[in-house]
Image 1 (cartoon, rainbow over the protein chains, first blue to last red):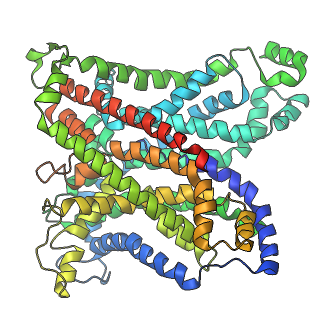
Image 2 (image 1 turned 135 degrees about the vertical axis):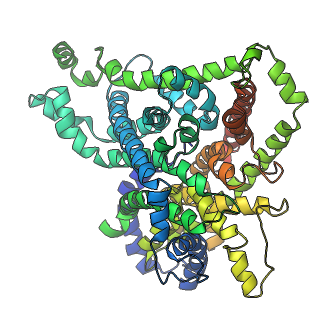
Image 3 (image 1 turned 60 degrees about the vertical axis):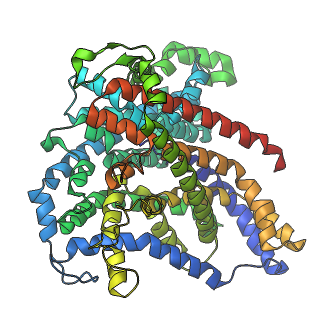
Length: 304
Length: 307
């Protein structure tokens, strides 16, 4: 539930900066030395091809079943029909679930980003009593199992009257995303030289103004990461939604999806089409951070 | 604010130190949320574990002492069974994900045509949810829609194979589905770390005549050590707690063969509404998780000087 995706970020920030020079140097030297044995093309393409089959066949299977007409046995996505999408979107309520999930995802994105930005800035730029304890506590939260918070969180939300509202999900998602988001943002802020802000102060900027004018633009990559992780997480979350929401018009996509499942389910077209609906937003968000991730990781190869 | 700035000015270089209330105000929302919705709930789990607390039988509620724990340890075979399966699940998943993830990271770290596209594609299942993974693999495993049916049509294997209903095949089947989604996590993390290894090290080793295998064991692996320790630990905790996939793919079946401890907790909470007993299970799981994590960190630090 509290998937530690974020960890990859800080680690990746350094090599992007450190690698280029070393790599370029290496490339120049290699031409002279010619001693390093490199894997042949087949040693790369063959295992990679096999792994790609493993990765892509499942996606392909889902898409084929989503678009092929009922009764067809073909494994090629032709002819295409949209009947299954009509069934899930209008008949099974996925249109509504989509809206609910989108609301939860966007609200979690905003609350997580804003709260983590404030806290992360404080952790990076101030020394204050209790900071060490707080940092250790952040790490400890990684051992808290989401499934095990179901009971007490349900109690709290019931007492607050938030059961069967999207706010229970927004709060739960934000709380579970906060620790890693705080660590990530404070790490990013620490890597930005404080002199930049100091220069702004000297020029007469107040601290808040320097923050918004100088620091915030530089933090954009961190905010993209934190925001998209928060969105992906709440879009994907199943257990909280299952526990806190039991009115059908408030269901989120994963809960709706779970109702299409069943080993001997009759409507495989609906199952697959529901899956495609669930996948599209996440795949879009992933495509955005993926590009950013790949450029960040391979910056060395391009810039030199 | 003005006073704080003035004070900073006076102290010259140490101007990032502030005695003002600013940092506390900035951190307050995080602290309040975490106390209210993480710390307090954990405390109440410990408290509930000492009580009879069942939503469906409110008349029996009250203080129970250690009764829940006694039942759990001595009268509940499903607890021990789920504990055993949890260990099996976590170990098998983590070992396979690490090995495949490392191999994948090494592969896409090489320079070749189409590398950016290959990376995007092989990493893509990382963003997919547990329920969606279930949807996809249910189609693949189903006897009428799955791969095995088409293989049987082609003369390989036989019709009507239902891997999820057979106690002999269900474990490899769920392991494979989770691998599909889990390997990219390790690959992304280890790839980031691979890029930080200075090229010179490899070149120096090649000049000295070290084979590719030796370079891997003497340069790559030691360099990745910390990343491996950290990622396996985080992922192990995550796989331990991972409920979505198993809950939807097998619901712990057939015959509770794939019930992990958190899945058992979730079904106690969601289906049986037995909060007291569920909380006792939670407490035990929490203690086990903490103990194993500390042990793992100790052991991995213990071997630290080898590198």
